[in-house]
Length: 453
Image (tube, rainbow, N blue to C red; front, top):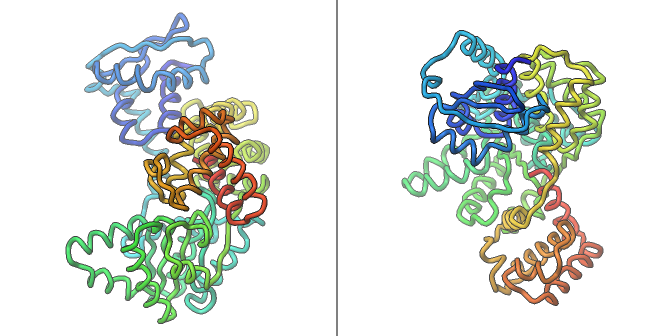
């Protein structure tokens, strides 16, 4: 493989793992100047980029290079200011190819400004299996008769399993069937921002009027209302106004209503008053069907045996399948290699190495802090509030169970506590999991969140 093609492939891999802004800042004006004696020399436009790539991305670059050429043992960087200004015909052609490839992805960003819906999400391209058939059936029924069957409809699942697709499919179908119905989809974070902005600018009446006129309100990731009392208060009134007028309300979350901490009981009660449906992890056959479907959407042919092999090896969520598909498209565009089992195994080997389930103290602390909406400072502090003590004990449980830390070391990490306190906390949660369904479910959700983070 030519050095230019190797670097294009490296950039394609890196682009999947970092933000577009970071990629454009650090990698846009780079190339391989020489590739010999087991060493790759990367040309960069200035010393600032050179120093940043050396300190922050050197391991990532070397790993990507070695996945394509195992003889490479070392990466060096050289400053060449001219590469920032000059675009060779070859680079221009490569850039145009990549732009054409990414045009499919840009289509995914077409959002209807009036409804907030993305038209690409439909029931027709929503793959159904045992893991989601109840949620799909309920959603389809609601789209045909909004406000009369399941109200509210509450769908929950871990991230990347298709709940956003289903929510938007409901909205798109309902709007298509009844064009006069006013449908509005939004993320909970955006809803919260709207309320804060309305309060700050004394425009709450405008906010209330806007939501009062909605016929079908769809809010994604409602768990982010947790702990936000003013937002919960306004949403409670919005919910009641719509519900009393038989307007349809559709909500999603990463957990069932009863497991959303710091959520007002009156909201939990209303969420549980309609239809609750969950989406589980898809089986291998369904993952293969989903992968095949998404490839067909992009007019990209993949043999059935390759689809099934990918489905067997990518088990975490649907978004990860989409990431593999995007990488395959880019790789095939650059290398022109056929998509077969031989080539796919080397690509997946690299992906699986970067996707391994890895835990750390900080990751556990942050996840449990977010789950219970308790600050990390309070979790590590001396507060004896019941909800804080419980969350702290669950941190101890995970540090012991998942990381196998010693009891004294856990005590040191959790604010300098005595090891006997740590032993008691671990034993208590271990027993509670066996006899308390709520604790068992919460620990299970935290574990799944850690695995998918």
